[in-house]
Length: 264
Image 1: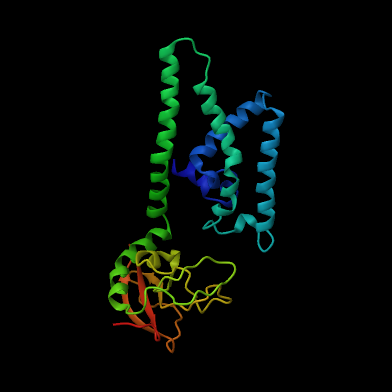
Image 2: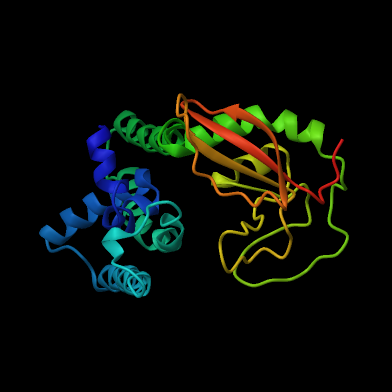
């Protein structure tokens, strides 16, 4: 099962065609589409919808291939570019459900059983499908490390921070989403900022250009794996003070406070 999931969501092409379109709706859609195409029962309207969907996917791939090979792009965040096209693909899942629901079956018991199956399948996808997706994101990969470390650092940030809960002035900037919440905490996966209900798009000063209009109150950075004796994190000591370190699942994280950040 894990290998099958990696086929659809473990590579850029799989994400673009299947994984980014909500797997539990996309897979049935592709199956129905393939069957109707092989039986030559695809209508002109269906063909037009599929052409539009395919064109959007191809154009997005071309756009994302301008600066680097699409097949070498990082998977994180890639699904959001293709997920907006998903409703075109879901039409075939909806058609399959509608055909089963309206199947010309004479026996009332069979007809009700078919409809109950459709309803149960949709309910299972809506409820358990989301749970599986979230559980996979939390328990696999580096994201799980960031979430574990964020849970450990959140009470320490709350105890340390003594500044306002909001920025007084809203400065507009293009290219990123941000709020007026504070503290501004930059870190991997923005998990620490979410944990303290702060601003997650803090400016990492080692990265140029920075799109966030506010300077970070804290930097929360993965220093390395547990047991590692040397860390290669470059922090400007004239601007940040080391506050404390916390563990993730298998890693060590450090919290750095900007010298101008109000603290206790």
